[in-house]
Length: 400
Ligand code: SF4
Picture 1: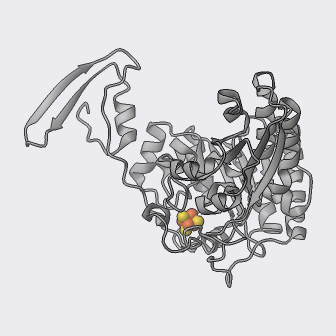
Picture 2: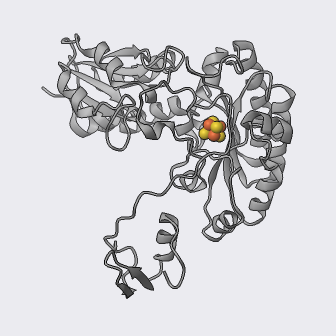
Picture 3: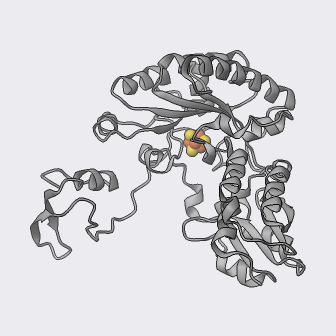
């Protein structure tokens, strides 16, 4: 492309952003061609790229979700990705421990920001311990070098009790705050383990440990609110849940930048329902089952009360335990189709069931590789995949 070799989709997108460029190609026949391309801005070129080769992770965290996978899942679920390109594109968290010098230059040249970074701890030895990577570079100087060149970050700390909580959490948040405004946010997320995780090496935090972490989070958030006009430091919904503390109001989360990371996800749902209130169809007399995972179960009643009030429908919360990963995996996004099927197969009394859209991948397959269409065909009621309830109901109402 204009004399530069193409490495991946990022090169393609950035280098073809010009209105005019020269594309040199070698065809499968071996023939070499040069295309002089001119196109109005934004007009698609009709080119499909091979999926990028995922950058593998160089770490071996005790709490790695890949180790926590049972056997027999789809092969991609065993890949430990740690890829700044996916961090930029999809908000996947990366550790920046596997960057080559030319990756650094690329991040700056293409302004790949904001990036989502797993910091965990800023004390270098603790971070290397958590990542089980003795060569992980010091994160604060790394972030500062990027910050000086205009790159911004959303960051997270996965809280591992006895390792990066207490004084280490205070240090980590203080160090990140001191980097300045390039650190757009930091979330504190309690470590999540499955039945298959290395439980002899790592454990989940207790309620008291979660409360202590929230106290630290609140201290930094109060300071940031006063200094910078944003809380900046957020506890994950799970941290509040496990601490037995109420969630902050929706306004607390600003643009809900880390909602995909379970930060403000509950309040986000409530704002979506409130925003769709005028467009929701009247559903008096209908029974709607809402499937969720165990984690969201206790947080859902206020969300569903909003939905019932707005529609007049009778809404039933159906909390489904994870039969594939074991009961400690409580997120709705990892529910297997088999567990959802077992919960709904006898429910002929429901007019509609809403199933979490985050439980399927882009190919509409659940984590246990069952196609959504197959599940839907087996169940006795109409079923919709739904991200925020309002979406499924506004678009299509409820079948008569
Ligand atoms: S950074 Fe840790 S948790 Fe993430 S993929 Fe690598 S080993 Fe697993």
